[in-house]
Length: 433
Ligand code: SF4
Image (cartoon, rainbow, N blue to C red; front, side, top):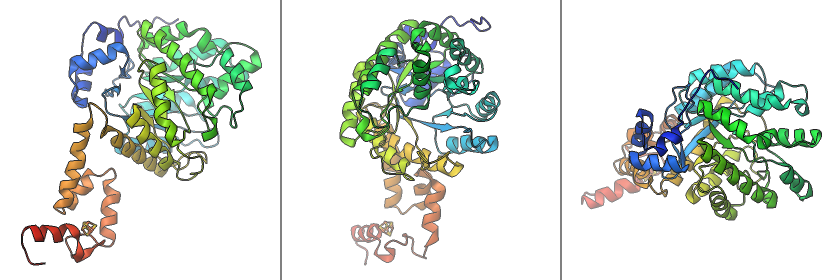
């Protein structure tokens, strides 16, 4: 193992000693949390703040009492490689409030793409290293066991702050998957690579078998591990025992991460019916002893192609209310193709609205979140359009809609002179209507 960078104390270990550096103090200030309280939450593993020791990263605490965060995935595919377009996606994501960026590139020069995109942003930056391990081989089943780890170390040396690693798949869970009646099997790309490799080679998942070595690498650079959910349901009928038992394995790995002093969060589904979201979130929180929960969606219907960002935002708001901490955005092109820059904008705004809706009822964040809604309501009462635009999630769109049918009235074109706000204001001021 490389000794180029030797880190003796990770952020979680520092927190256990009650030490708060400027990074943690800034995190507490941004979240409106007491520094001592934030330290206690980090020490227990209930909150993580992804930051590679080699990178200057903006603090974005994820977990209990912290505001709900939004991740934006960018990256090339094998069929479409345009680095300029991916750079634009990062800029748009940041402009509309993304809290983290993940590079999921699988086409082109992956090292160059990752390093270029990382330089564009100071937001926490994440990857799924097994994608690169798979691309470096002709067939995913030919990945050498040491390559699973080498790629993690290479990306850690580049400064990647958090990594999705599907360490929770093991031989027992693959057998359970084979016996299941799943419709879509495995829909996680990283999960499918691991499962395919294990079955073809008849070997244990290297990340599971040698989890201690993986933690050693991550600890050296203080990289946060995001324990990937390989068996997330890819459709509503696949919420099953395979998924539920994966929570238990992930929970055991969370214990190891905490013992080792490596920050960790846990990923979750996927596609979940609306009435199962709360149970699903609470089960994950129990199995992982309150590890920060990172969810893709969940999508509440399988039939929203072209509008999956809306299906996901509905699920994310409900999941956030139940305790999910980190939402991975979904774009209108989900299930259909690689997103465009415009899709990224639509996706991040939908996820930000869901996150804000969750924060409005989240302990520790309610009052702060409500300030924005109160500001908007007061601006509506005063027909103060400028403030309304500024307070919205997409000021340019809000203003352009207002302008397109604008009249001479100070109200908007919806009701014109019959503007309810104007009428009531006049009555209260005993003016003539
Ligand atoms: S005109 Fe109607 S929609 Fe527009 S601000 Fe007044 S009450 Fe609201």
